[in-house]
View 1 (cartoon, rainbow, N blue to C red):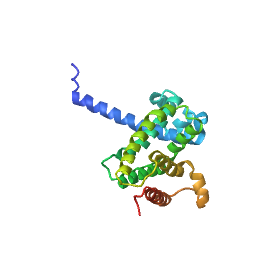
View 2 (view 1 turned 180 degrees about the horizontal axis):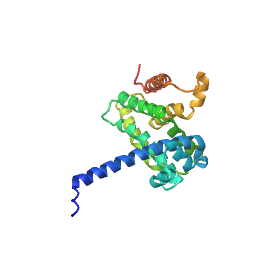
View 3 (view 1 turned 45 degrees about the horizontal axis):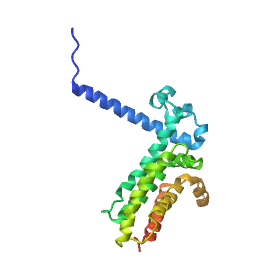
View 4 (view 1 turned 180 degrees about the vertical axis):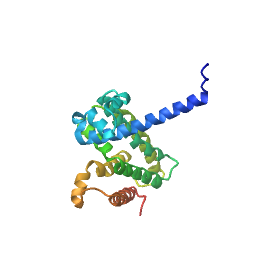
Length: 219
């Protein structure tokens, strides 16, 4: 008896399901890789340790990422992409206070939700950025150049105080990422084992108010 022909809709549904499974597995692997790379560094991390942290067989890990180098590059590229996305709200038509505040809050949220990713990125930079130097000199530089021009426009039209827009980004990055990169120091000063959601909320309000006041956007 001849086999029944498959419907194009069935094939599309199967492809979509496989795509969702792949995305879910890659997300689990990348989250595990962030934790392992943050704790052991690139040199100390192993694919076996990452597979264990992800709760997957090592063979599955190699199916999605052929090598530790490929996985490490993906972790770094994803982190930079996620850091760049919130800056899309900084446009000439946007309200300066709302746009800058939104950017700061997004960066603070990423530090709270994915501190390991920030630590991996920071460690990469401390070692001279051998893997991401190209991205820093292209994608990151272009983002800062474009958004700094927007901020210069706001300043020229009297919509905010005169600040150095490039160094404003440096200040925001330093203020927001410190709660991930140097959480041990923050916790030691606060006298507690880890930062709580309340700590992150308090820090967020402080950083937002401090920077907005410096930009003349908060009285």
